[in-house]
Image 1 (cartoon, rainbow, N blue to C red):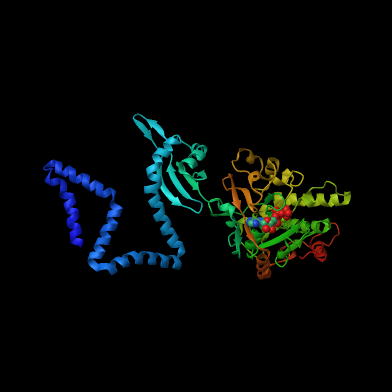
Image 2 (cartoon, protein in one colour):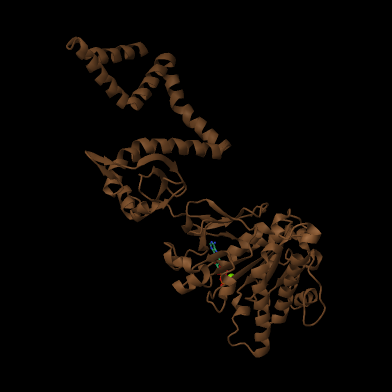
Length: 495
Ligand SMILES: Nc1ncnc2c1ncn2[C@@H]1O[C@H](COP(=O)(O)OP(=O)(O)OP(=O)(O)O)[C@@H](O)[C@H]1O
Ligand SMILES: [Mg+2]
């Protein structure tokens, strides 16, 4: 059978030679070879099939059809990651050659991304196709004189030309752009975590998923403060909770939580928090906790170099005896927005705001990171002196550009993403600034309260009192610290 197939191919190749002779026969043979090369894949499949059938008969042919899918299925169940990598690469190569490659020249020309030269046009070079969770990514070497913004301007044209809902443009390196043909909006689906892995490296803390389906990380070294805002129910507390669930499992991290809502949103952290205060009316209790953290900051700033050898906390190794202190103030407007307060409460609120402001300005080299969340992102709730010193900013859904600007700053004016566009249903989606200062949309994960409670309980052994990590204990009525925190504990507060 195999021999007769070979005879058949030979006969086809030789066919023109009986009528065409000499040099012309070489040309006809070459034409035939090119034709065969063009149909190489079906010819290769048919040849392998014929060979297997002639050598091993029908069982061989059946094995040829059954074994590759079986191997693939076994591989996928044993090691899905490498299987995915392999199949993605195969799909990407196929799409480069047969889907995007043949259309690229025409599409880039139709979208005005080509360059006209005498006698024709030069298209940018389509170098690679990659498969991502969102859709195919086309890596293009741009023409000399072009910039990625030229492609961003043509994103809508490219989306229509490729028949996809959206095309996103980014530049992975100078001279290259990635065109993401978006067929799936990853941010439309919630990221629900059944457990949160411990954060071991504070310089790469995963916090949310980006539009490409990849986790985003933040470097918390040398960070003084973060502000976050969004309308009620936009996902602020849930986002902060998911972050805290990873951080509290690190022995070199202590948490101080002040919940200005006065509810139980943060009660899960009580067994693990160095101080937890859910007071929205008893501002003395809140001030006591803030004073104690402020005292810790001052002690560290004054003594750190002498006792530990460096004035900057972040140049020192992670040490549970000298932990990083995350201070979370949820619904911070309860304390910072003094409108309508009676004079005594106003005085307390001003002291709290002043202390928070000092923490935001000077906490970085003391290893104290202050995180302020609010549903009222105005300059009354987050004074610009605080916002402008907060290097990390997160805007969940807001209702106006003014609110967006109050959180993210003037950068929002030139950005092509905005927290005002976030649909109400997409709770947990927020706009954050990337390492390069660009704004992007991310979705925070959701950790259910029971999971958070379980994490706090299993890591409760890592909890240290603020006084035990060097915060001064002041029993003076005006200068409340540990004693005040304890009284806060008595007032429905776990410390
Ligand atoms: N990342 C998320 N994914 C899916 N659902 C979420 C996410 N974040 C929050 N939600 C849903 O939205 C609800 C409200 O979230 P959350 O309490 O965090 O809002 P908030 O912005 O803190 O509101 P408030 O200002 O009233 O405290 C949650 O109970 C949850 O059901
Ligand atoms: Mg909340």
